[in-house]
Image (cartoon, rainbow, N blue to C red; front, side, top):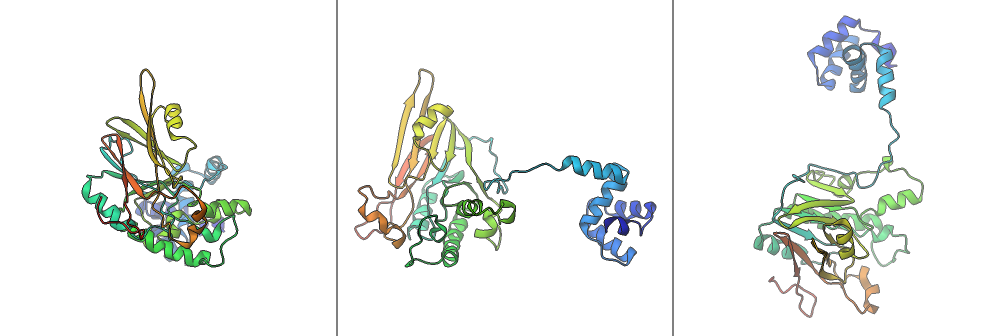
Length: 321
């Protein structure tokens, strides 16, 4: 089809149209449509541009396209938006632990607003598990909880409020957050057929300044900090990676541990969570001795500061840091 369409214009006509719109294939396609009397798409124009401008012949254009085709093994963590300066030195980093929307603590936004007001935050790293996806779990879903669709709509409301508070975030890929990709893989569905994180969670605007990746490395005045969702032992990872390590995942652990060699001092930290322990989704935790610790972490001038959300007997935030 592309070849037959292409022959409706002479080489001189092609060059004239392509030179009139050297970078805008859509505008060139409209001009081609008027000229040929047949619908021409921007993909046709891109191909013809390679033939008549870039490569010179159709054979060379086809060969170049074949050489550019590579087998891509896409990952669920390749949803990168508009990134901040990842080479900068950050003096105040906010680490937001697991939220498990829509089962996040109801005082989460008020609490994080207070933290934002109290500290000169440069950048925000989200530990992941931003969504719970109980309805998509590999375990049996509780019939007394919402369906996967209703759960997602409620989660989008919570995350929209978080986006309003912090429109710029680096998010760690996580076991709950990537549930759709994990389920798709289990059932043989390639990731090319799936929507990006941003298209599912923020269909209205796409959250252009949120980015998802397996891990993030940021520099501080006391050295780099590696952020990832989980670790069996953050301080051991710190020694191995030769940098500080900050993780989430373990809801009942809210701690910082230091280690040192003769030359270096490292720390490994686990940031608790921001879940609603009273939610029916966490009813199974009633039998656990260790309960979720609600809070966040601020890394100020390279030093981690654990900030617990102190709760009253009813499980509500007391309203002050």
